[in-house]
Length: 220
Image (cartoon, rainbow, N blue to C red; front, side, top):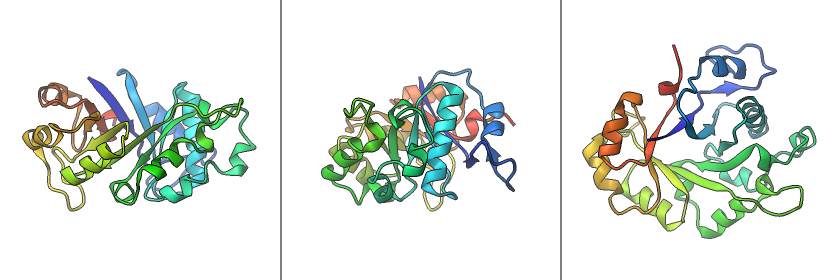
């Protein structure tokens, strides 16, 4: 079983304290890395893009693994590539820290294949030699329409949920509905929403490519 960790609302390492938030240091101390993580999605909807990019770089350096940047409903900002101020601070190209971008379901429905190609080829994924490296583009989905869009755009993976826990206005899908929804979808689909490591067998039984989550990886 493959696992995707989504960060809680963590903040850069140089921010010592924020009410109801995780600093990067606290996140690293409470996260469980006993499992081999396929991907780590870095997000925090309360901060600016340049701060999120800084967290991604710091997190990648700390765990020695590339991460995926969550576009947080602002994909157009990410078409422009990384913030110039941060590019001047880091010694390596972003390609050494970031392996891809993750779209919200709202953004997903606004995009076409040209957008996806622009995302794949922007400055996040350009090496020192000026060549564009490999990039992953994934998305969050909640229904068959969104899954079909993700597949038609040739994304690399998607997250589908919630399986057990209600999310905003989405009722829990349950495993049978999950299995039915992904039956004709050609890309890898991770289940999420109120899941734990104990759900791995059910996920496998219902043809999930893996499990994604936030709290399931945090010791508390």
